[in-house]
Image 1: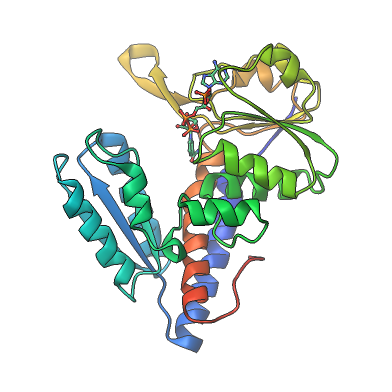
Image 2: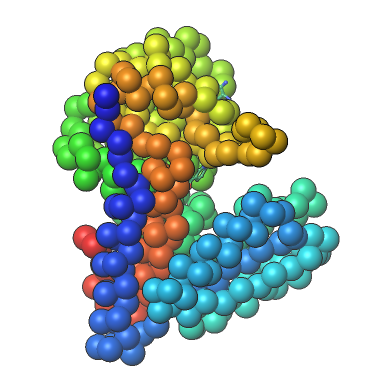
Length: 294
Ligand code: NAP
């Protein structure tokens, strides 16, 4: 039986350290980290994500600003709002909840965002800094995965890592971070050939596909570390729904050396890493040392 990687417990510990650092920042420097959330429309899942981010920010003592816009908002108005937040000195981090409705241009919205406040690290500036090994704002879910690997695996130098999925939000930054930690990294996607064979070589298998229970137990090298990023809502008994990952967890847990559950694994880390990024952005803006090693 594998070790269950408890993202919830790791996230709770990181959250405590952020709260303590924030209290010191306020007491010693009079700086209150500020996080702005921007939500367009009323997609129920996005509403829940944004509500949780706002609640976490408030609980940590951050200033929380929210801009809610109707689903049919004009591109110009959205850009105006994002530029106003970029210019607001009390806001250190801006989170535009994606995806946006189809009529809006996501790239133009990211271009309107001050990269220093881009706490999701989606702007080309932050993606480029990550590639150059100079990023201090790193995409939240990949950052959370690296913290879990650090805690549960330690040194990953020389290990074979496979990342399935190449999104800007997760797969690409995750591969860069694994590479920076000296893993031998392979990226797979929908055009990759013989995914099970690629997966069987991996000491660290990271799945970010968005397909429920796609990765099967016989794809996993015995003893490998399995990081399941997927969050998929599927039908359960009694007409209810439940969340499952991209890995067939029950069977995979019999083969893996360590595995993240869904929920309670990677997802738990994401919001806390967003708060960590906001804290980093607030320190950077005020010329204070960055809290990298929390
Ligand atoms: P995405 O943008 O839809 O990307 C999915 C990736 O999976 C793409 O690169 C795609 O390949 C690849 N893929 C699709 N079908 C495949 C197949 N049959 N074989 C191999 N690769 C395949 O998704 P995302 O934003 O990265 O999210 C992925 C999952 O992670 C989703 O379930 C999402 O909800 C979850 N997620 C969770 C968190 C969290 O906080 N835990 C954060 C972000 C995302 P192509 O590029 O070739 O199309």
